[in-house]
Image (cartoon, rainbow, N blue to C red; front, side, top):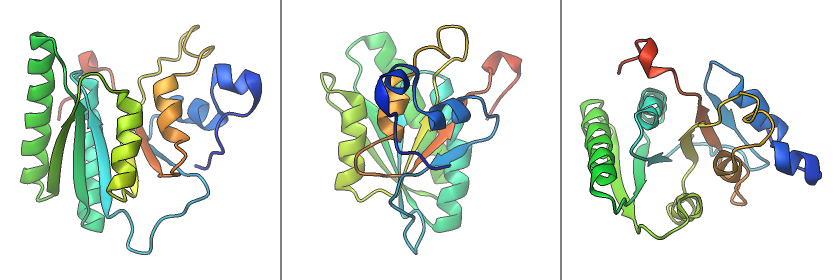
Length: 180
């Protein structure tokens, strides 16, 4: 799906059309801007991870793409200063590392500084490593408030000025029996 980013005051508040479509989908989307895919496909995929369970749900799609294109996966996580949150983050990173290694996917892991703007760090890292794809979980919940105000995090990554395509995966309710 293509995007040009939110235009005007209304879309800046409510989010762009791509974000609305992606948020209502049960299937993953790759959102692109003007910059197209390389002839070699997705050579480098940046995968932000946090301490939530939902964060791991994009790993299946990333592994499939990485295997198909023989991609290198770059896990990027924001350091947590709280010990409990750091433990959850560390467990998610270890889970992802084991998961990708079992799938035979080349992997790099980076932990950012705790005081940084994580979304900006994701884009900066992706640019520095000439990434072809960023994989995110859409945390926007489409209730009365979610449909009225766009998630700045997702919108910032989807409409990144580097025009790096973004794989958007909507989380599945873990309580409904989802397991990896």
